[in-house]
Length: 335
Image 1 (cartoon, helix red, strand yellow):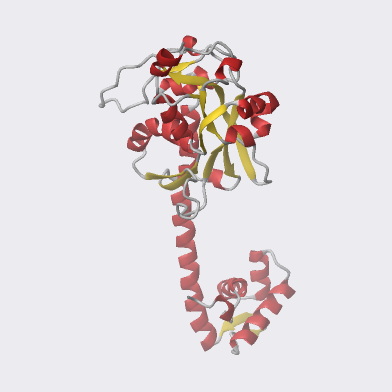
Image 2 (cartoon, one colour):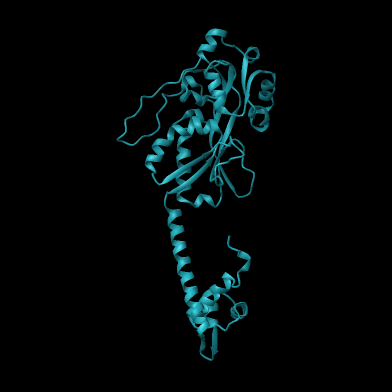
């Protein structure tokens, strides 16, 4: 590994040296760099001390490079050209929608509501690679910091940019087979006598669920407890019991049945990124894509106000290229 502590020439000093060599004088370099002439003089003196050589011969008409100064100038000019190439390369990379984008998301959101839209997005953006971190293997996290985060918690740190992109309206669900066997509860009180599939976030996220919903969750007969939304969906689908799910689940799992009892609170879904990251074209492309997935004018189940599943329009398939065949839309079913 390179020992960065052994640097003898400060990078900022070399920048000043290059300006003096290019302009032929301390005053001209000071004007080009918008520095005080005395600062330029002190910087060159310090650089010569660090290198233990004389870089310039001072004269009444300016300065000329010594033999050591000429060698240094050739090296620094190469460094300057490399820096310019680096700036151009990085600028181009950030201005084009290409590269890797890491999205952190709860597993249910990523698996049921984002993944169905991936094929069309990746075909339209062949230079973008997605990394989806659902946080389910904390001791072996996917490499790199998240560029974007889907979360139900409002961002609290200063440099975060957070936008609300959806409202996930929760209700109680069961499978048709389960209800045929055990009957359909007519109230939240009736639900308490049924086996319940419980996601622990619905107990611990008090700021989202509210006291009444948490009190209800506390009284349920928990047959399964999990930290995975996918487990809740599959357990409900397979007839294990009743569970709380967003009404949007009917757009991807239309066989589930929403119970005719009071719906639970809505959870606000945030899309969060660091302020600086938002300048990247690849990040903006993914942000626009995620916003389109949860666009309430297209998908009314994500609106602020509650829309009952019986009023859902026919579920639209993810957008596909014109050459690809479209799958038939499926209408969700409710009790």
